[in-house]
Length: 466
Image 1 (cartoon, rainbow, N blue to C red):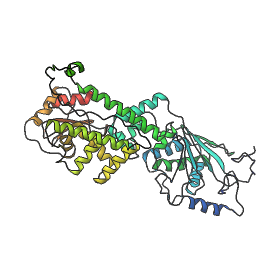
Image 2 (tube, one colour):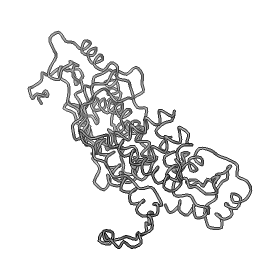
Image 3 (spheres, helix red, strand yellow):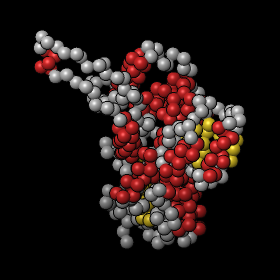
Image 4 (tube, rainbow, N blue to C red):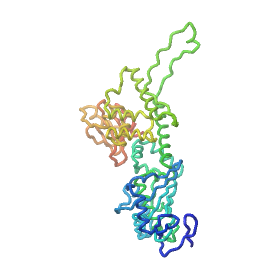
């Protein structure tokens, strides 16, 4: 079998089943040698921090093809640090038929024999150098998700603020990944290489897999791209679904009654009758419209925040004559500003807003997202319930557990103002309301859920049915 270079020309055959590192995909330059070319590739990858996205990946307009320069050599044995990169490596190693080829592939990855890596839906490719003058074109194939699987994954991501916050931190919650089999398992990674080695995988494919795990450490959105959807498309679709869900919830809870009116003809006649009573103030502040982005237009996020501020303050002045935000702390005002935006930090502008507000207050985007969820649950009182535990006096708190037990709820364990079950929690606020919280099974991160209520049984019922 005659091996072909990337340009299609026949490549000379050597005496080894590898390919000599050459610094060029089309043959060695005059005077080039393995050591010189390895040094050149090391210089090319210098400054790229391990575990971070490599510098300036080439991104197509549709975000479905990304190319990363060759990674620098490894100084230790660690290939994968994140749990999803470890899962990727585990899927490779559990399906390998020859541990020796895996060991050589790991060595190839660590010594810089894998050139630039290109990631597209269902495939990752690169040229891998061995002991021959020409590198081999190596690929790993992975099945893309079906439309139904994507719909399930995106719906789950859009419905949980903790998942959105994790994605903003470039983290992948394991429960979200499990919702649609985002990560590969044994047998899912299919190697493909132009080398004559019939191993499964060959050392070149193994090297590419190990280097891909290093990329996944710094950019988990490559998992979504490999499954068929780029980062901007994923975040845009999550933002769309979240906005639709928020708008539907607002519409369902508005319940605005029809207002009395007067016709224009009556208003323009000399005999004007009694005017209708003044419009009552709205029960809740409304949402501003969605402002489109245009090259010459102001920043849509800035317009959105200005409109939200105007609505909130206008209603406050109309009903109370006072500014409701004058007494807020810097942290409370930062949470309020983030909560006032209808999105959840999923666009480039709102991700920047969350990052800037969190950094200015010494918090993380995840802490800000949890605080936003509490603020939307009940304003400053709900934020205090999130951040401060206290010892309530005898009375309503002591009567809550017997009432919950009589209503058929599982055992709640008390601690200060909190009643906790494995996945649900009720927190008693200083305002006399019960606030619902939820966590994954076995998890320790509690997130506000549902609306507060004076009755703990009602609050727990809403939380369980929610």
